Every structure is written in C-alpha cells, then in structure tokens.
Length: 217
Length: 217
DNA sequence: TTGAAATGGTACTTTTCAGTACCATAGACT
DNA sequence: AGTCTATGGTACTGAAAAGTACCATTTCAA
Image (cartoon, rainbow over all chains, first blue to last red; front, side):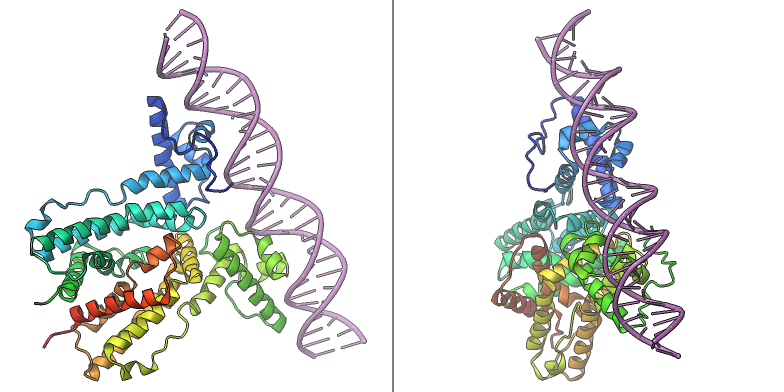
C-alpha cells in the first residue's frame, strides 16, 4: 500500500540471478516506462505492461513486489540516463562564453525533449506519494548538471579565464537562467523550439549572465 | 471519457440560477480542490468529495457533468487566484533594484508555498490529458507575472530609471532567474526557505541580473 | 399556498484493476 | 539425464470507484 515499506525482500534488489531473468526484467522496465510516460502511472494497468513486454504477472510481482515497486525501479533506471553524457572535455580550450553556450545547449536541448518532459511529468505527479522519486530525480538531473558546471567554473577560475564572485552560487543560477521559460512552454504549449531559436535564446542568456556575474576589474 | 468533449450542456456554464445552487457549487469546488491537492486527481473519489462538501452525486453531475468537468472547474477557479494581487503601485517611486526585489519577493514567496506547489503538481500531472489546464495555468501565472514586469520595465525606461536592451526578453528572463532552483527544491525536498534566505537569494539574483541586463553608458 | 424544479440520499450496475493461487512448462545447474 | 527453480499463462477474488436510477425532501417563484 505505502510506497515506503518495501518489506518484500526481492524489491529493488537487482540480483536477477539468471540471464533470462535479467532480460525479462529489462523488457518489463522498458515497457512500463513507455506506458507510464504515455498514460501516466494511474492509467497504466499491469495487463498493459504484460501485453507490451510479454511475461506474466507472477514475474513482475516476483521481481518488483508491487506496482509501486515497478515504478520505483523504472524511475531509478531512467534517472541514470536523464542527462546522458555531457561533452565536457574541451571546455577549458574554449572562451568561457562558448563553453557556457555549449553546456547550456547540451543540457537544455535534452531537457525539452518530449520524452524528458513526459518523464518530468511522471516524477512530479508521483513524487507526492513517493518523495524518494523526487530526490532521485534531483540528484540525477539538476544537481548533477550543477556539479559539472561548478567544476568547470572552478577550473576556469584557476586557469584565469573567469573571475566569479562565488562559483557555487553562479552554478546554481546559471542553468535556471539559461533554461528560462523554455521548459515551461515545452510542457504546456506543444511549442517546438528549433535549434537556431534555442541557440539564440541561450546566447542572450549567457551574455547577460556573464556580464552580470563576472567580477569587474 | 475524453477531457475535451464536454458535450453535456451544463458543463462549465456557471449559470447556477439559485443562491443555494451557487453556494453548493462553491462548497463542492473547495472540497474538491483540497482533495485534489492532497491526494491527486486519480486518488480522489467523488465519495470523498461528497463526504467533505455535503450534497449528493446527482448535484455534482448536474453541475459539472463528470469528474473531469469538476477538475476543469476547480483549476479554472484556482487559476484566478494563483498570483493574487501583486503590489505594483509604488514601484516607480523606488530605485529599480528595490522594485525588482519587491516584485520577485512577492512572486516567489507565493510560488513556493506548499499550496501552490501542490497546485502545480496537479496541473502538471493532469495537463497530459487535458492540455487546456496547462494553458490556463500559464496564462494566469507566469504569463501574467511576466506582463506585469514588462509593463514596469517600459515605464521605468520611459522615466529614465532603467536602460534595457529589450524589455520583453528581460521580462521573460527575470522571474526565471530570480526563482532559480528554489521552486525545484520546494517540490522535491521538503525544504523550507525562511524569509531572510529568500530575500538574500533574490538580492543576489537581482544584482547579477541588473548588472548583466542594463545597457552601459 | 401550490406546483415545478433543484437537491439530498441511497442503492445499484458495471467496469477496471491490483494482487493471489495454481498448474504447466521452459531453463539452468549438478 | 534428471531435478529444481523460475517463468508463462490463466483464472479468480476482492475492492474501489464512475456513473445511473429513483424517490424523498427542500427551495423558490408565482
């Protein structure tokens, strides 16, 4: 009943012993993710999951304990790939403006994907009853991006490329600023943003941010 | 079944003829709002609404047509009071920095209220199936705040208090920047932000923003 | 006062769905 | 090969809840 008491010993224990079990679990997770994203958690029945993934009810309960357990597993797995790999190698070889544009573009273009939007919806909706979902999401998404940016800021400062008053605060501010209202609009209007528009949006934001945040000599 | 085909003639027609009908409708709307915010739409049964509001099933279906009709009515009514009244009279008598701090503080302190967070959750979750909800929310919340700010920017520029390159873009950027990650954290950690911390956060954001956005002479 | 309309309350229908039980079967391990 | 565990598949149970029907009761208008 509750999301929190995973008393069943099996739950969240990804020790699927056999290869077959592993592949079955994977199929179930993928099917469940698709359906949750498309229909929402409440409107997805286990019958639909089974229809899509194959397998049987029994297996699902064996592996995930309950429908909520399945949700937790789905979210946990998806969190790992929310951001994907951010290209951070060459940042220090660019001017800071270009580096920030590159980071923001990578981050935000992922963020406003229909798939990520749907995932965000799912997490927001269900984290009312399962706060851990929200925490996982924060850690895997915004906080990770923020940490990457903060590392870059420190390195750029050490290299004398950038003078910031407070890299931690700047890192907390930057992505939110660059995101602007794009995320909102992507959620509520089906407002497709093409690459050029996104780029322009980000350039303006980066310029304002840099001018505002950099310490003047 | 669908959210969109409100074929029933009664729905969204707030012509409750009698005073009694009006007060009954109000009670139902309030009860439903409380329950939707607390439990979510899917987990709120009409029995619970009736238990809280009094009245009968019959009346609800007469007035709102269906459970979705009730949701629509609830969201529509709540949208009107999302922002409430923003204090905008004396903005032009303040230095721009103080004016922006005042606006941001009013806006964001409302935004991170548990109640608004819950409302945001509700809209995000249900706007998958009922896009109009999202549009209404955008118009009543972010877009309205943005319009107010934009008007202020224009007035302040006309009065020579402020030099902005593009007041529309600045208005789109400002609140997102001032909000920063506070909204996120309010949603996913139960992270209470006291007034002083919020104030400090906003001051820093306003200073960076002003320095970045103002045209230098 | 009287009659029509709206409302309350209750019981009912029907559907959907989570979770369980059980048996047959396919894979894996010795 | 032979045993044993995990899995597939099916059927079932019980509960929850949306929507309907119906009658009693209250409200309101003429």
